[in-house]
Structure formats: structure tokens, C-alpha cells
Image 1 (cartoon, one colour):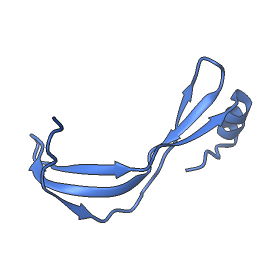
Image 2 (tube, helix red, strand yellow):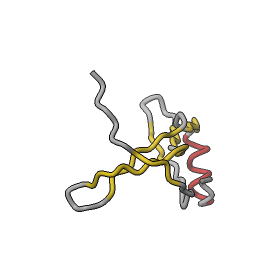
Image 3 (cartoon, helix red, strand yellow):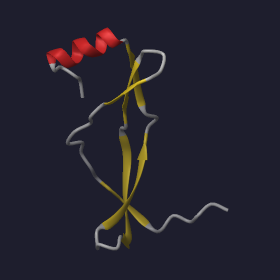
Image 4 (cartoon, helix red, strand yellow):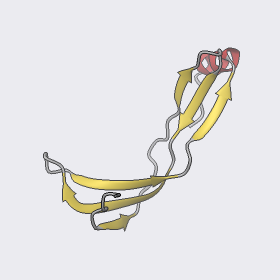
Length: 82
């Protein structure tokens, strides 16, 4: 049985930063992965510190596949796109 989601209200949001995470995989390629939110909902619950609990929805992760040279070129120019 799936757990019930607590009551929640959709709230507006704006991205302040959408960073890429890069992972080196065993076959020599570099995977860039970024999560992009599509919806934010605020519940009426709080965590033990008193901070509100949010539920998020996101699109499928954005993924890019880079060669080692492409990754080195991006990082050496410090132009990793956000």
C-alpha cells in the first residue's frame, strides 16, 4: 500500500541556481545530470527542527554525455552551463 501524501498547497518558486552534477563512469565517459523542478507543494507538517516539509515534483533528470576531453575543455574554460 502506498503511503498517503499529507495535505499540501502548491506554492510558487523560481530557480536561483540549477547546477550540473558530473560523474565519471567506468567506460570513460562523463555524465552530467541536473534536476529541474516542475512543482513545489508545502505541507502543513514540520520536521523536528520546525522547518516546513515540502513535496516536489520534477521532470525527468536532464542528462548530458561528455567525453573526457569535452569535460576538461569545459572545466578549464570555467564555462559549465547551468
